[in-house]
Amino acid sequence: MDNVIAFLKSAYTKLVNINDTPQKISLGMGLGVFLGIFPGVGPIAAAVLSAALRVNIAAALLGSLLTNTWLSVAIFIPAVKAGAAMAGTDWQTVKENWAAFTATHNWFELFKSSALEIAAPVAAGYFLVSLSLGIIAYLMTLAVIKGTRYERKDPDRRG
Image (cartoon, rainbow, N blue to C red; front, top):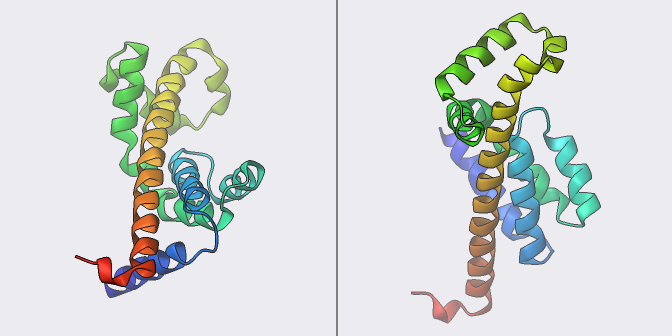
């Protein structure tokens, strides 16, 4: 547990000390969180896309690494529920069909219409949840960086 706390403190310190605008750092973090959660993409996509969009690459990599894989698994059920709601289908049916689909690992089945009915809600749900968490990460990072930098400029203003 001490290692996790030390890692998070180190990540925080590195994030607020990046020499870039708060907006570019926050956009990088939000993009990294979005790409870290969305299955099939991660740090490489975060680095490439953040460079293309001219946002902070280090923040994008940090966001992606903090959320990559473990959070994708943790938000599977909310993603399936959101995707099924958008598709107007029962989420438990989508979940069961997805489990059966992934158990066979036959990705050619993905191109059949029945498999698209399974994969589309899951992908849409992950997109919606990843986007939402990316926006939250952007807003939180922006607030933390601006607050930290404001305190540094005027230490007498602390409450």
